[in-house]
Image (cartoon, rainbow over all chains, first blue to last red; front, top):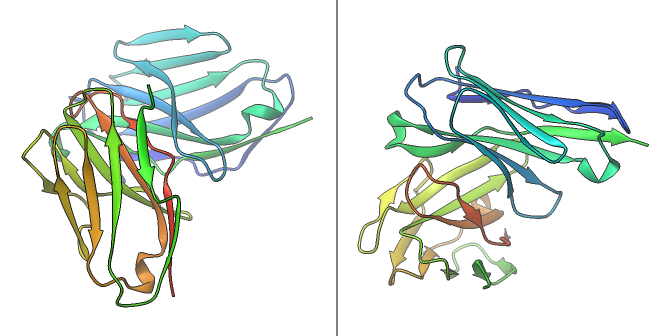
Length: 112
Length: 112
């Protein structure tokens, strides 16, 4: 099992729909969770951080964390073609010196 | 405030040549990282520096060396380039190991 796992996709959603991206992780002691967006040919860009169980909203983005089930998700409401990118989940893992470990990413395609 | 800068943006090397990738950050971060990203492989950590004066191997350190020149600068050296080192290289920095990382624009390296 990979330490930080994401479905590679592609996840295709129509414009205006809700895109749901999921990430599972292996370490029950993890405390820091981040979502990054990476456009093709560009570097990863931080879009959300979450540290406590529950939901955190920022504009059209909502991060959801469930530490008991060891998953973190990202919801994108009113998806736009400009949201088409690869979304990376990052989680701190004690096994790796408490450093962030990145998932391989989920490709999102928003069709107009 | 430039964030994380990397030079060069593109480089083509012949097998056996050497080169140094430069990275600098102006956010007063303690930790710095070098990643490579290959299609379908996600981000793989090559080396990191938890603080000035320290460096440690990551997941794929073979064929690379690093120098943390000061708090701002972290360089990656390829002593004898191989075609397997063709990749996109990203430098990143953070306040600490479990904090969010900020990425530079990347260096696209081709080894022929």
